[in-house]
Length: 291
Image (tube, one colour):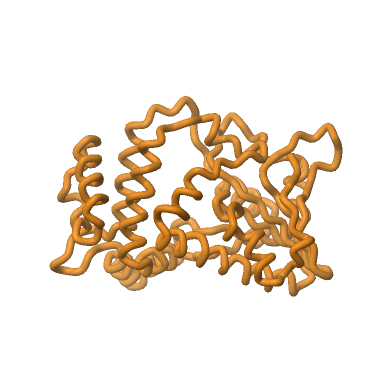
């Protein structure tokens, strides 16, 4: 099998995101890592990526969007109850019982700063509180652009072109089950990682560097060094799932397009390096895209 950068076909095409073509026999998988984007800049959707997407019959993404139809009232009530149990602490415990002392103090200071009542978070599991705190941050952030979600753009393109869309986590319940299963230490580190991100401050140039093949690895390196339990759950474990999935996709004669958050294609435990370590590709066949 060969894993190689899928480069632009001509010198007139600009270098885009980190992007690989993985082949074995007649099977092909295109793998793209993406980050933040804005409505006024689609430079990430290079001609090479458009060609690869057009050649693919199936799109794979991380988490499915919320279901909007197809559930009867009883099924929806059961799903809501299950999600509630996965996202909330059991009786007698609170979010702040789950956090390491330093993270607890930082969290309390931050929510006071942005005006989140403590009572709003107390009943939540850390992974669920993460999204409430993150939402509050972005409600205060003054962005110079209108954000857009790359995975949603690709999902809509796939639907328009009649492609199947599949997911690592095919429902909100599947996502909640994965997040709730993270160890307590990883749960606390998830909040810590978010607070560190806030302290870094917003940097538009860094946020969009992935579009030119220059991803920023600071957050990933920090997670690996400071938050090993979170790194194990979010990077090692999830990337191993994708490596297994890519291996299975290659066993067919089809062509597939995988779009995933850029951290999952970076670092020693990123998907390309795990493909190499698992023997799915030979070490000599793993090459980073040249810039």
